Every structure is written in C-alpha cells, then in structure tokens.
Amino acid sequence: MTSRERVRKALERKPSNRVPANFECVGTVMENLMRRYGYSDPELVLERFEIDIRPVGPAYIGPSLKTYELDGERIEVDYWGTHRKNVWTGKEFHGAVVRYPLDGFETIEELEAWDWPSPDWFDYEGVKRQCDAYGDRALVIGHEGPFQVACFFRSMEKLFTDMALEPEFARRLFDRMVGFELEYYERTLIAGEGRIDILRTHDDYGTQIGMLFGLPMWRDFFKENTRKLADLAHRYGAFFQQHSCGAIAPVIPELIECGVDSLEPIQKVAGMETEVLKRLYGDRIAFHGGVDTQSVLPFGTVGEVERETRRVIETLGKGGGYILMASQGFEGDVPLENIEALYRARDAL
Image 1 (tube, rainbow, N blue to C red):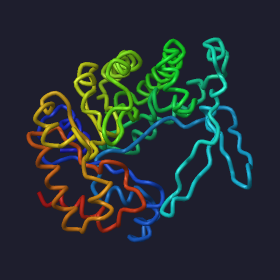
Image 2: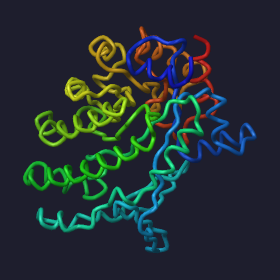
Image 3: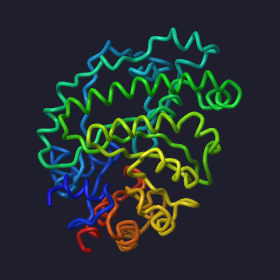
Image 4: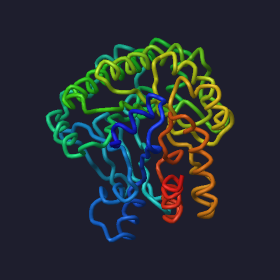
C-alpha cells in the first residue's frame, strides 16, 4: 500500500496496512535532526521516519515585500500586510506581530477600499512539479484560515469587539478572507490535476479550557464559510481537514455537519480525551495528532513517549481513521530522542 493510499484510507475511516504518519516542526528542530544524522536535505529526515504526507503549494510571485528596521530589529511585512519580527524563545524563533494593518479601520467602506491580497500573486504552474516530485506520497495544501488571518489583520481585542458589537464589519472581514481562499485554493487544486489529497486550514477556536467564543457566534461567522471550503475540497477529490488548537469539543458536531473529514491536532485538554472523541465521533470524522507536546514529549522519558504514542494509536486508530503526529509541530523543547521514540512506537505495533 502506498503512502497516498494509506492516508486516504485513514481519512475514509477505514483500516490500512499500518497507521499513516505526518511530521511538522519548527526550523531549529529540523536543523538539529539533520545535524544528528548528517543529512543536508530535510526530505531525508522525513524518509527516515517514513512520513506519508508532504506539503505543496504555489510560490509567492506578487509585489515585492517590504522590510525595515525598528529599534534595531528587522521587521518584515508579509503579503497579508502584517508587520512581524522574529523573537528568540531560547529554543527557536517565533514570529510576533508588531503592527496590525486594519487596526485603525472603523467602517466597512474602509475594509472594501483596502488593498487586499490577490490570488494572482502566486505561481500555480509550479504546483504540478511539486506533486510529481513527491511520487506516491499524500499531498496537503493550506495555510491559516479566515479567523486566524483576521487575527493578523486586526488585534484580537478589536476583532472580538467587532464580533460582539459590530458583527457586519466582522462578517465582511471574514467573508473577504474566505473569498480570497476559495479562489486561491481552487486554482491550486486545479493545478494539482487531482494529486492533492488534503485541504487543511488553520483556525484556533479554543483555549486550554474552552472555546474562545460560544457556538452561536461560531455559527454566525464561520459555519457557512467552513462548509464552502469543505465543499471546494470535495469537488476536486480532496479531503478537508480542520486545524484548531484547544478545547473545541462543543464545535466538533458542527464541523462534521459542515463536511469536515479530519480534525487535528487533538491537544490533551478538557473534553478532547482520545477515548471520548473516538467513541462519540469516530464513525464520522478522522483524527490527526494527539501525542502531547505540552508535557509528555518535552518532559517525558523515551519509554513514556513510546507508551503514550501506542495508547493514542490504539485508541484513535482502532478500526482506522487516524494519522499519527504530535498534538502540535515539534518545538525546540522536545528532545530528539523523544521524536525518534514517537515514530519507533508506531513501527513496533
């Protein structure tokens, strides 16, 4: 069975010859792994761990992006118009927003007049070459979703105030984002000529203890747009995967109703217990992730990581419907030995 067949079986909630696996990490982790093995190409690390999924997507070819210095630090402006700097955490760099381009806006007219990113700013012709290069691997496209990108456009405090007090303004902001994404993703799927297996959008709706906002607000702002994105993926033979960190158990039935095929990353928080998720929803949605990056992977022993990985696989993967990965991309605080233990545990089953 090929990687692609294995992943598609999991997303159909059917058993395969083994649990498929994915891999994501921050840059310093990949650098450390390549140094450990003497590799010069990240692809060799993925092959070593027998990873079944590869990301593809169109390269940015739009207007030149601005950079400047602020208080001695380099600031980069991305194609969304968000100003960021890189912050060193002691283990790796993370981007931090220093200026939200829409924070001064107060009217829908200002939103409409803004210079929105264009789907024309990307090289879709290169997508097929990427697909061909990965052979029989499963392929995924996607970036931050409507809510997550809106949090880069407008500070969260203002965005939440919009959602509560100026819902038409907030709705127009999210709808403009989805309008961009629908065209961008459709052109990418067409360019892939049927080889793209997963469309994944990243929208963090949860905290460690619950949703960022209630279900009525989620339905108002995000349900129809989630359905549109899922329908788009399905029209081109792909599956739709929803990324959301946090305790998002209340919204899972809504996601299933919208046509979401897979949920990730399954953090170890209240209401997201693997046994509960599999029992309640395992016949309607697949799961991706689940091996805890907040305690077990950074602080556990190799043996504890192996045991936890086996537990997650045996729970979420029973009868199919599971893709192995950590509950987030590997951060710099995860020992390399524990990353190796996670994938070794899969192979031992």
